[in-house]
Image (cartoon, one colour):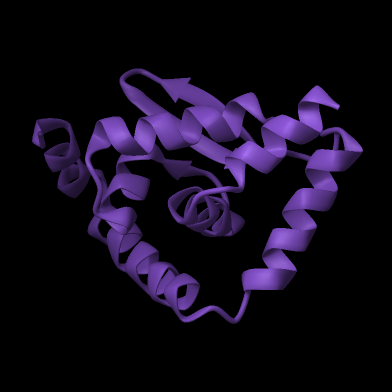
Length: 121
């Protein structure tokens, strides 16, 4: 029951849903998520922490970079079901399409462009 409640809490925010759907593209650096969402680094960090606590995303650290990806096939059934449901429910949402286009642009910019994320307020 606790895991389901954590998932429900994590899904109760538009920005966290946008993060989840951005991660469909694969592993993404926190800084790329910051650029896509156009939010403060601390805000995005809080959002991904809630998603991690719910088991919806996994993190890999590489030096000062934090990379996130959707939970894998070995995730508990409620997590896998929640991710499938969110993907189906929001795949045609205009905001999600705009985020995907923005993510493509951010990814093409390369790591040197992301360092600005660390100097924001």
